[in-house]
Amino acid sequence: MAQDPHLPRFMAYLSLFTFFMLMLVTGDNFLQMFLGWEGVGLSSYLLINFWFTRIQANKAAIKAMVVNRVGDFGLALGIMAIFGLFQAIDFATVFSTASFFAGKSFLFLNQELDALTVISLLLFIGAIGKSAQIGLHTWLPDAMEGPTPVSALIHAATMVTAGVFMIIRCSPLFEWAPDALVIITFVGALTAFFAATTGVLQNDLKRVIAYSTCSQLGYMVFACGISNYQVSIFHLANHAFFKALLFLSAGCVIHALADEQDMRKMGGLITVLPFTYTMMLIGSLSLMGFPFLAGFYSKDVILELAFAKFTLEGSFAHWLGSISAFFTSFYSFRLLYLTFLTNTNSYKYRFEQAHEAPFIMALPLMILAVGSIFIGYFTKDMFIGLGTSFWGNSLFILPEHATILDSEFLPIWIKWVPTFCSIGGAIIAFIGYHWYAKFLSSIKQTSFGRKIYIF
Image 1 (cartoon, rainbow, N blue to C red):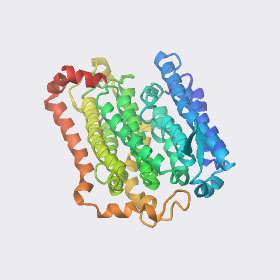
Image 2: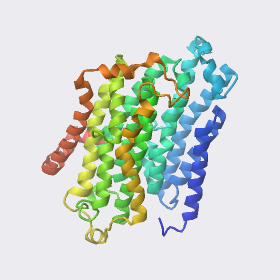
Image 3: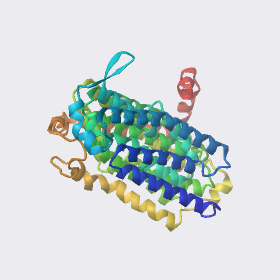
Image 4: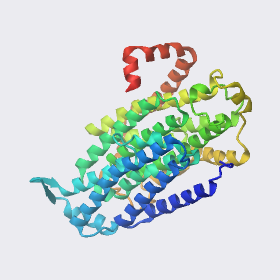
């Protein structure tokens, strides 16, 4: 982007986005949070549509705006309902008095509806839109039309996690709506599974990473659904490191190949871009939850806690999450293999001109790689350790939700399931694309395989 004539406009949009994001995070009432929420949506529209001469960028930006409006409508109704019930919109008042309204109900179409359940579900609709959960997920992969730094910032670390942040922020409210938490668990688990299976069939480099973001957001949401908000935000923090690393590494590959994003037109880049390959390998291993990297410490804990809940929705989330872990490692290694390890499919002039990232681009990758390896290990006890006082009263953590204690006494094979799924997915992807690529292609061309692929 150094040669882009509109660089000052890009920096202005980025600063505007940062301003609204800080407003959303630091707000102490629902109105300020809502203003930040809407501002973030507006800035994301401007950033996705940065290259406004591209028709696809125009379409993607409008799609992101329209789909987010659906979620924002639910959030606005939820805030109105909060004001109607509590006569206040500041967090301290609403959360401290939530228990007094536990039995209250709204009368809607002559039906008695539990007030806090309705409010929680309306707020969750807002989170579904912003955090790209199943149903309103369609805007996220298309948003990859924006510049890669935008993808790394918006679609990895900050904007898409705003919905999860809002659920965590309102955790004292959600805890009085157990029916809403069950729905949140199911939606999160289905999103994790759906996005992971969809990512397996994508050929665009950034789209694969976009679907992986969608899948990881599903993990964060169902962690909230099983009342483990501190683990959800731990995964959110870890995810920001390795996902930004993956996006920026993808940006280096695209930059080296003169803006080529199709993985089928790459291959053999390990000899030309060894540093970028190393960074992408670290990011992918952390994403799939390889033992002792950042993703392992949060993702596996989420799956253990889901099982330790010993309820229908908990078991559903655990097994669907474990299957999703298999597909996650499958598409991660498929991405690595098609981009770096297979025979070269790129145009000759592109491959000859491909070059390693300059130091100014490589430095952020190195910083993020260190975070992707060590951040989970160093912050685990602070974020989710037993008896940690790090969160104070900002999240809802009570002895009744001591599933983190129960998870320590689970059978050992339950703890190994996600790891075996991850390693199995990686091995099958490597073997499949290295020796049986024609077989995989023939499956895709059968009538049943074609239906799945088109779906």
